[in-house]
Length: 135
Image (cartoon, one colour):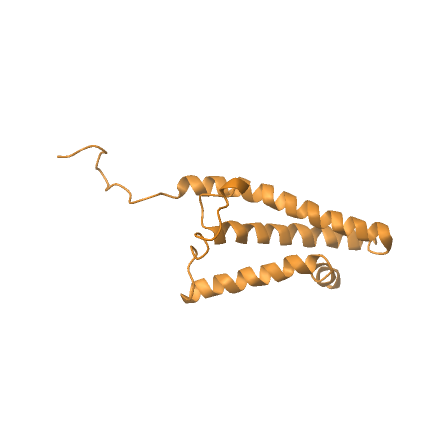
């Protein structure tokens, strides 16, 4: 448990941990009705980043959770391998944070793609109706 706490609150992974706390607080506000999942859709366009088509809060929450999981796991492995001291250990921690963020971004793009296909724009046609049927 000590290694996990040290990995989650280390100098670089604390950034991911703080972002995760913000995400959890946001979704608690959504659950209480004080905010909506579409709160940031007018502010940010994630299409160029490959994460468009779903609410921004969903995409960034998924990115944050995946980056936190990968970052903490990488830092825990580095701590378990006793590579936390010295310049080489510090460089490996920086590299682990950067790689975990890049992998989380790729995984988020992969996970958002099916969600984008399921999300509809506009109302769905009534059951049994055929498009173009006027009668």
